[in-house]
Image 1: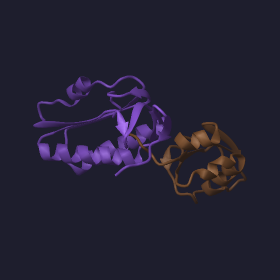
Image 2 (image 1 turned 90 degrees about the vertical axis):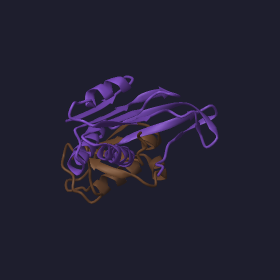
Image 3 (image 1 turned 180 degrees about the vertical axis):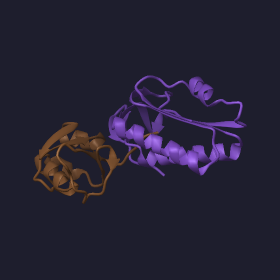
Amino acid sequence: MVNVLLSSEPLSIQACADWVMSPEAGGIDIFIGTVRNHTKGRAVVRLEFEAYDRMAISEMNKIAAEIMVRWPLHKVLIHHRTGILQVGEIPVIIAISAPHRDAAFTACRYAIDTLKQTVPIWKKEIFEDGEQWVTPTP
Amino acid sequence: MEVKVLVFGRARELAGSGSIAVHATDGATLADVIALVKTQHPAMAQLSAFSTAINGQYAAIDTLLSAGDEVAIIPPVSGG
């Protein structure tokens, strides 16, 4: 089962964990992205996310479908925020349940790495003394 | 034919708009439309690297367009 969401509302860690929880799963792996308060020594005030909504949703669904095929997983959830996020807020949650932990860890890592390469979402860092669009990082 | 071009992130700021209407000749490719966009919005020449999409799917720059297609200019993504 797959659950993909692009939302301007705050993401709930508990709701995501509850959704992937299953008696058939032996473990759940959850990646939570959070807004960091600094980049290369500059203090970050907030992040502004924008998305090409329909394509972002379809690309997140592609990632979910791909990892469901590549690894033995039970449930896959990918939720991403849009709009203005303050330091400490949550832009992304990826939650995966699987019969065994190895697949959950591996698939979760693959999902966040791929999301950062393919899903059309952009963030701008707002500093105390300026702003910049974030460019991809390895 | 009329083609709608959506632009995002830094490309949107360079264009000064998130949506650009382009009148292209029949048989135009994605590359032809991008060239027209850059003519209309010279500041977009500063955008060195970007991907392109048609109707919400990544598409190669030599893809032929049809009337009513939704083109997107996708600067390097930075979600997560």
